[in-house]
Length: 417
Ligand code: PLP
Image 1 (tube, protein in one colour):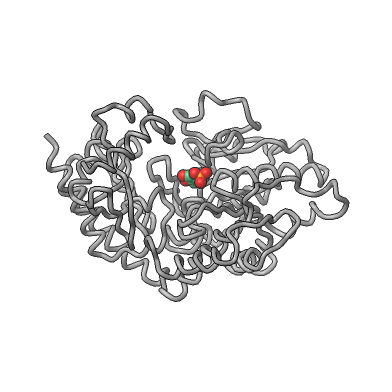
Image 2 (cartoon, rainbow, N blue to C red):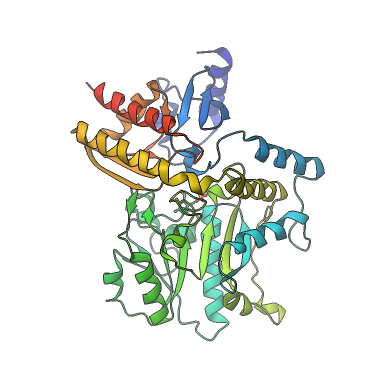
């Protein structure tokens, strides 16, 4: 190991605290974490000069690859003007343009307002608080309850966490946030009394942290219909599925569903900077107009950060100039073929699940971490969720990158003792 790598790791182990990480295992002297120092396209390099395919898009954020010249140039250009200015009481040239662009993806008169925040969790917090305040200001303060789906994941701030159904993360904090009921299907929802329910929250088309589990076709439409029948608001968490991952720009477009709130983050800036947005309808927005006490008193210091806006606008224009969505079906089909051959070849593969360029490869119990670690030796970086390997590369991957990824997993399985 190079001397500077060793120094970086030692400082990290002495003072840093990693997310979702048992720290004793991390700081164990035998643990030699990779130090990622560079990226280009779908590739990452560690401090020892080894190259890997970014198999989980750097925790599901990266869309067009790393160091894309036009996103880098947009950020640099904005940096030459100003890195940050307040959106509280001021405007700047890019935030309005970005808000308008985001709304342009939906039919006129539907999602037409954008509230910016910082990450997936805050995009969800915004939707939760906005929906509750909407009820208070439209004469239905008694509608305070949320319904979420079992095993779902919506972020880690206390409000967003209360919607989380992954018990190992959230059980210890139950009851410390808003009232939330959990269901497994729309059929189960039909059995609930909708009277006190404010909103239903769901990861559309596929649950991510729940080991990449797609919903049945038509489920989202059925959910929208149930919400409409009972006057319940629909919050779609597209933090993972947004920006092309599932084949359309937003997953809800696959079923022609328009939510009351659409939460996006990770891929909004192409994965370059932390930024999020909560889109909502004119109907919701109108309830916050009028006297000052009707306002939504919520915000963060970096709301609508200009660098983030510049990256987001550049990322969205790449969808057009690089015809990203047109190229996706062939890539997704290629991946489907590779995954079904992998499952046919290897008994260790229990199930494969896929939606667009999001895939989960479920291995036999106990194999996830080991196969993931071994796949590094074959040039693939990713993380398992329990025993499911996540394969969610940047959308710019070519078929040969997908071949490499699935070959790396196959070789890693073969090399198991
Ligand atoms: N919602 C979903 C569906 C997610 O997958 C995530 C993160 O993985 C979040 C919300 C939380 O986003 P963040 O980690 O940016 O707060």
